[in-house]
Image 1 (cartoon, rainbow, N blue to C red):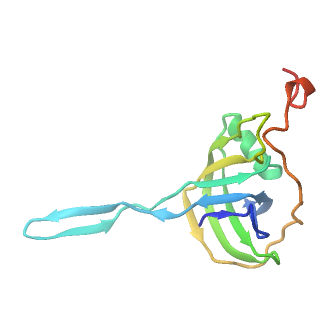
Image 2 (tube, rainbow, N blue to C red):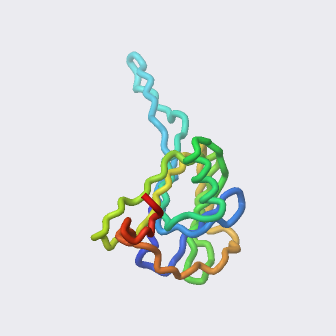
Image 3 (spheres, one colour):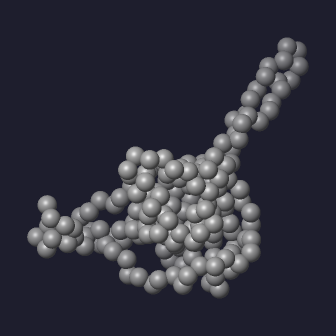
Length: 170
């Protein structure tokens, strides 16, 4: 279920351990897959079965995270590996859930920060990869309580400069 809200008015809400954890710009992954195991039989067709289910990593992009997501990312960057349950919820224009992908026992696997380039005009987005133990698409689900999404301009990867000390001292 790949979703990018960059050019739509729909929203992607993030929940961590049952608490609203912010809004995402894009999200992909979380699908289930399994290896096909083939067992040859002499003089008979090969038996095929499905192996242990595995789940794709969840890759989410957002502006600088805050709240529970920021705490989780900070713990990851500090070398800790806490696991959390969570969900990504696609909301329609009326803030009603359209799709909900829940994950269980997910750990942050990687965090990627955008490159900074004084000439760039791209939005600055942090990409977070979550490796879940299991996922489950539960459809729309019931109404969710989210604060109003802030209509912020965001930040650009070119909005920095050592001569202006906007990124701290060097």
